[in-house]
Picture 1 (tube, one colour):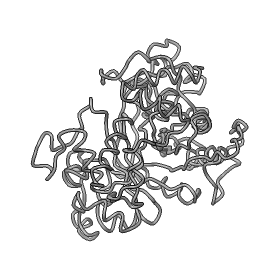
Picture 2: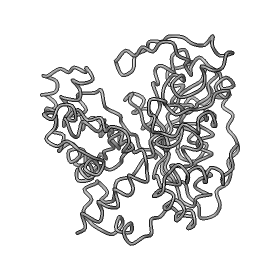
Picture 3: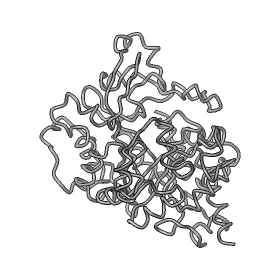
Picture 4: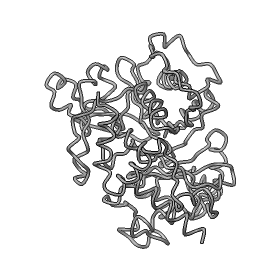
Length: 427
């Protein structure tokens, strides 16, 4: 395992000059509280249209994947050192019932699995339904077919599609379990000197629950693990007897005065989101709604507000609008149903409509500035009254809307833009 010092050095090297200076300043203070006169304005100047009136919360998307292989130990360390408020894991379930952290249901794109001959027989094709949409993936290694021991043979790689991301940390880090992720964040809270939020996303719950002893196996496994590590209170009892084999490590006691950060659940499966909300009342739920037309109506927000605390659409819903984005991903809708729910909310009004129902907003994903922003209007200027031309224009637009959370890559860049906007709106 890499030492704390080595991981810190790696973080400084890859963050670049600006990131290095900030990280060194923050490390020296043993705190990630921004203390320069300019950054202090984030706490003192007015002008934020968020539900809380405070600056948006920055979520490290899969850790800090702009520089490190995503969901790796180093990616999470760097996200913490760069000042993320939350650090995101995606959860999957192995054949032998272990929760592991990986974005896709398969492993070929971001690990060295293809280089391990003893695992070649596990390469296969799968088709499943995800929120009513058929997903087909061919010639891949699927987490649900593999044991934890097999997955622990793998090493994580940067996606080679993004050539500007550093590739020299490939094959250094193993796939983490959910428990290892939670242990890491607890230790970061102690070592770095500030709390970090955890925000696990349960990927394709019906896919992972298929073949299990009951249809909420995946959800309950995650609830029991998060509860063990003191981020969740089980408010409605789960099926503990089905998880007698779940052996979690004894907790490392937190030093006096140290408190954990907040927690939140995420899921595109709203049945799962409702279940998580009902069973862990102290953990708010993020409803991921990219493929659900009704969610972008007044009546849809009314429905979501009954169980979710945060609504999370793809960011282009705030630029191109629901109709244009849904068409671009081949999602259809019943016009009469949409009309009965109040019609599609204009993109520039969506955040305010959500806030009026006490719902926070969390658009995704704000990429590193090396990567195209991926708005429809960049190909067709008619798709959006406003079309961001650079990273600052993009962030300032979303800040003006009052978004409450932002899934970001290159956290230093995002934090500096947040600081710059804070100074601007306070003038």
